[in-house]
Length: 302
Image (cartoon, rainbow, N blue to C red; front, side, top):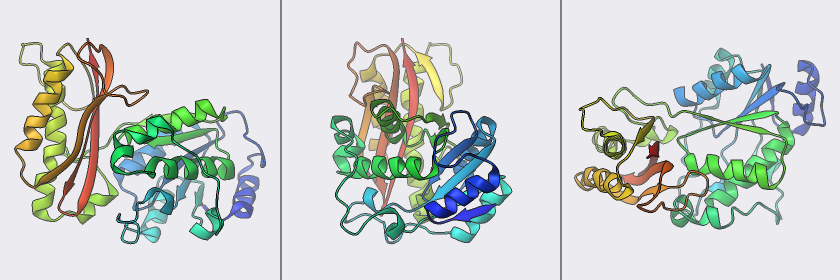
């Protein structure tokens, strides 16, 4: 496994691996899994998905300062580089790209990517500038690593949708692949921030997945008592009923400070109306103690 921290190192890695440098290869030679490190089983599932799609896999490890607000957890975000390298090696990663902030951004940086109107809603409403920072670093990673495929987790659903939109709007020659959310046995979505949770916080955090389960249950309820699990489901209940069922679970957990519970169009992240049919994403964000968590589930409303 090759570890690179700048463009020169990436070019040498491509040469060593036999991947043409300086241009997108046009096939499925190289897949990129962008991460901020603190890797867990969710990240590892994305690496395995990448290996199914490409001959070589690169993982970037970079805690991106542009996507953190001034009062957010950039300085304390978990950094576990040695353990991350071990995980990448165990998953057969060919290249780890681990630049510094100084390598990624000029001191007088002026140009970035705007997430536009779509980036100002849902997460963008509560974290202004966050999605601008995400798109800026992803575009830079695409330019530096030059992958044919890039793999992102569905848990960050709005981020995934924004990246797909950026690729379409800017005609980037990269295929975007989304990997399903990986959960603990009790339903909690895996997150690098879960390590912040106290025992009591973790119990309270389960309300997020239970709320999504309740909303999905409304969408899937056919009156036959069928068992339901989080994932992708088809149903025919009105969006208002779905929201109401999910919100009731959140309101029953006093330790949660809810930022939002929304049912949105997967392509635009605009709230859907009660006449909506087809796919929709039920998404939630809440604080548990000092930790902010997000989660979502995709529904098919008929």
